[in-house]
Length: 326
Image (cartoon, rainbow, N blue to C red; front, side, top):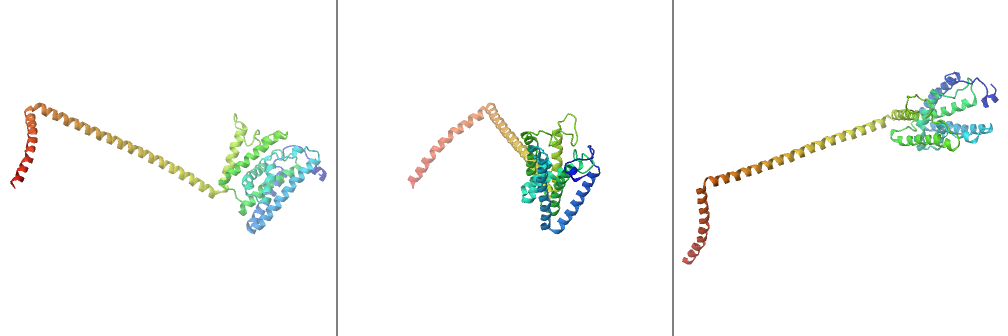
């Protein structure tokens, strides 16, 4: 194949050559580069790591500009160079995050970009469409290689690691990808299944819309990957959740006990009151019966009661006489 044919994507027999020679060689080079550069970055420190990352990022950004100019020169419409696929957009934003050293961009796009690169090499639909290497195939290989290399080198060297507490930023990045692929594509007149919501990836559940299957499965994979890459943060989160649930259960039990004790006390007070009332009723009835059965005693008691005031009236007089005698 001549250089002209290579640059113009000419040559080869169209077909699906996934896991063919070109694909396997690309994967081998990717694995080798990832291991070598990660070891160098881990041993040489942050200064060397920064140089490696900047080299990859600047090369990637220059290449992104170059291939768009080249495709425009071949007569492709302007709207076709917009990065509608998630990996196309990440191929710009991930290197840009390295150059600017923007932590927020890293939180939003590193993990999803890395996952997209892995999935593309594992399931390269429509990429290796001929048995020979062409510029179009090379473009996809370089884009997805950078999406894997940059996050891995940062993670191994410790310059940036995704945290479970930053999942909100990651989710916002996913929303941006969806808006770009599903909405902006319509605005620029290029409708298509750029988020693979209407494809058969990763599998199809009969009767379930594919966008639901892919969304739930993809979100679950991202959450699990985020938890695996941040074991310390995951443990702390689990401890907080467990402690909160334990406290909630404890408060619920205590509230129940308090209600039981309150009801018990209220019931006890009511019983005591009823008993006292009954005792008073019995005493009153007993007195009435005694007065009815013993009218003479009652009369005597009444007379005694009448004599008592008279005696009391005489007492002051005696006291007065005594004073006069003195």
